Length: 464
Image (cartoon, rainbow, N blue to C red; front, side):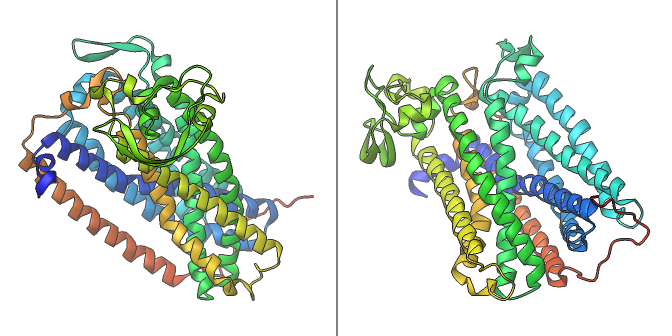
């Protein structure tokens, strides 16, 4: 095993790896849950407002997928929460007074709301009026967003803890409002919500492109493709703005993470702007970049909106407080590159649309464009993974930033025990994903039922 052998005999590293892999698998499903719920709600809203059956068929078809994705999220989320007790028991003891309450609120508000109205949404198409069914779908959307909000409250608290202090190894809350609405939340929650919507838009666009390339259910999937191209491009552009806000927050509250993300070693002097490295190979041992391509002043602009703004370099941060540099440097750039590809794909699609190439008889001829969107479907999830790697690894060596170190919060387990559970989780995750692919394939093979009509007893409110 060579140089990796010490890592795989370290139970803390294995616990971190296990939590990371389980989280990466789990996060796929909340992302798609939020985005797909929103799409179903919007298509159903258009149907209720206009009475056009093609939008009713959109909502009906994609609502078949929703319970499958929701179930995947629930099943994969259970072992994720269990690890707080099994692998990170000392962390749970130290922060349970706050994080335990937040996770309970999430379960009793967002998750419960989503679960109750999910049944009404799936089973109520023929039983409720369009307006009442639309309300149920809207509550599913609200529940999913509430869950995301409270989860981001918990994670943001770990990034910028406020409203209390550590006493005898336990975080004691003195100001709940400050702890909940901590500085990181105001940038991270909008950024993550937009990531869910943007990621889902490109996943659905990719699914639609795959069918259009094969001329399957062309009219149905062309409507999906057009909608998701427009929505995806719009959201990707807005996402860049929330990313800018996140960069400023890093400069203010987590300078070590910002410096590591940019492989920035020397604090810039007054009147000298900090350069941004497009590409670099960080030499951690010698505290420099052995290879780099830089643009002057850009990092100062990104971090402070001032071309001469000061950015703290890694050399001014103690070595034992620096996060792993190479991993988060490249994770951030993977996220940015995929985001740029999304904007490029959306722009190319908009130009093709303008040229009249999005006609049912011509869309299949756009083979390169459709293949581009097919590739962007999984890459949109990869971009979310890369963003979270940068966010979580960049917080190291702290589990509660500046207060509690990760190495002191792990459960006292053996590396063999953690290695076994890691292996079991990997196998279980692969099997579970296989089950998802089986049922997803069944739904896609059946295809949309273009003969599906709204209930005759329903009265649709049409615009006057």
